[in-house]
Length: 113
Length: 113
Image 1 (cartoon, each protein chain N blue to C red):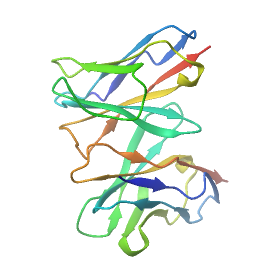
Image 2 (image 1 turned 90 degrees about the vertical axis):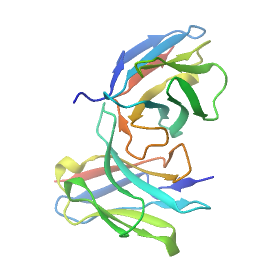
Image 3 (image 1 turned 60 degrees about the vertical axis):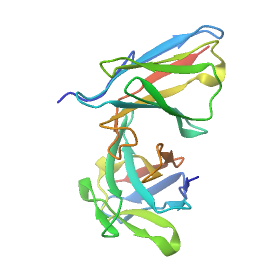
């Protein structure tokens, strides 16, 4: 069974631009969670989507948004990029919302210059 | 709310020596506890988890952890370190009714030959 895939793996953007990251969960998994990982803050929860609905949201500004499609694939968007948005963005999939078995993708490394 | 504290952001051990990575949690309700490992340029991989039942949990690659409610701890151990154990380790907590994971800031393990 294929694992969680994230595209692109690396991205360089300029301040003020926007970016869209994609996550394809494991087949059959309906929940996708997004995390931001930085050296100073560690892993911080962004949001979780289940059945195309946002189920939970972390403490991030409205510039961070996401969505989930009917095939469970998820995208997250960051608008008006800031230097501090440079991070590794990880998504994790699980069978159901609040699932204890989370499977992580390799992440997308975003660099904002 | 829940939180996790990992004592020691960097731990070095000699090959063959005991590995001990510390994790303390805070939770007002019974916690579910996890250890994840992250190798460079990869996502997180689940090592082991505690939900209910036996407090000594065995995971992959020879790791184990013991849930100690009285000490609010979930330390990760391995009797004999291998070079391949060098990685970043994360402790995480959630609950039965919670819908997000809270991660510690991670411990980088170095294994000295």
